Each structure stands twice: as C-alpha cells, then as structure tokens.
Length: 263
Image (tube, rainbow, N blue to C red; front, side, top):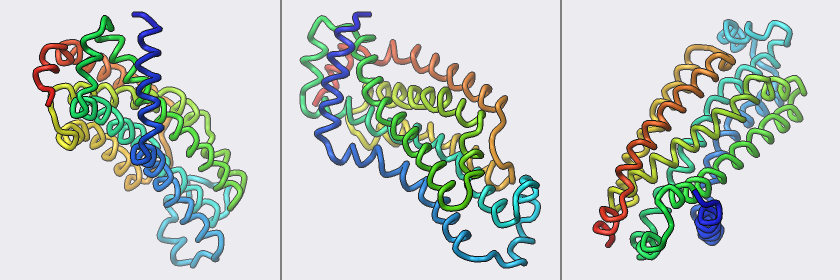
C-alpha cells in the first residue's frame, strides 16, 4: 500500500468535509446532544435539594456510590449511566460521512476518475476510511473531555474522576476508534452497492441498534458503568466484525461493478 496515494485520498476527502457545513454539523451535533442531557440533569439536581421520597426511589442505584452523599450519588449515577451513549456517537456519525463519501461522488461523477487512476482499491478505501473516522473519533474524545470537566465544575470534582476512570479511558482509546472504523467500513461497502444515500444509511444504520440495546439495557439494569473486561470483550467482538466487513469489502468494492452503477 502506497502512503502517498492514501494521503491524497484523505486530503481530498478532508477538504470536501470542511467545505460541507451540513456534514460538519452532523459530526458535532449528536455528540453535544448526548452529553447535554445528563449534564442538564446534574445542573438541575445541583440547583435544587432532592426530595427525600425521590431519593428513596433510586436508593438501590445510588447505593453503588456509598462514599458519596445521596445528592452527589444521584448525580454520579446519572452521568455514569449516560456514558454508554458515547459508544453510539462513533457508530452514527461516521456512517453518514462514509455513505456520503461514496454516494455523493457517484452522483457528482467524481468517483469514476478516481477508479480510472492507478490507485489501488485498498488505498482508496484506506484514505476514505481514515477521513470519515477521524472527525468522529476527535468529536467523541472532545465531548468526553468536556463532559467530565463540566460536570465536575457544576457539582464536584469527584464526578470528573468517575468519568475519567481507567475503564472509560481505555474504552475511549480502543473501543471508540474500533467502532468508528467498523461503522465507516460498513458504510463504504454498503454505499458501493447502492446508488441512494438514504438507502445506504438505513442499511448501515443497523450497526447502531445493538449498541443502543446495550446502552438501554445498562441504564434500566441499574449498572453504573462497564467493567474493564466488558470493554476488552467489546474490542474483540468489534475486531472480528471489522475482519468480516473487510473480507466482504474486498469483493463488494469492485471497480467494474461500481462504475456500472454510476448515475
């Protein structure tokens, strides 16, 4: 694989992203919304004294934080439970970027000249994948950093330490990039076989459903956060899925088949 060709594709994709305000908004908006909801709840609780009856209703959950006062324990439960949604951001955001990267170029007739050049398909895929995954990874990391610092500033620095736990720092460093990579590869492969961006996003969007299910199950199950072993298991599962998508992609992303679908 020639790094120069990969860099050329990446640069072209990056310029297209920076010139498209809608796509830029699609990168930042979901991450900010997911973080704003629990932060708003923490700010609301901090500004008011909790009703004793309300504390009793969530006693089984705040008992997971025996070293904290009931009020701070309720806030800790909120911010740690909503952190599962940081795994949804890297699944949703790059999917839109990846599908637009291929479908948009098909419609603009700019993909055909690229496929006619000496660039190899793995080099083209690598450049497009990095360009679509990098903004989502950076957005997730930035919002995660703000999430910990802002909630700590609103209530107590112990909330910051809960957010920046060893488990979640490891998840941010490993699981988030892997989910982004899987989402992008799936979006590119699906987009190479269809001609409509909405269809590609609907098909590829199924990748988000299991992650949403995990987040909801965690919230209603009362588990405060993921364990280190669960993150490692998640890394292994996503790595296997990436391998499957790469194997399918080597067949699906074919020059001749894509060119016949242009237009």
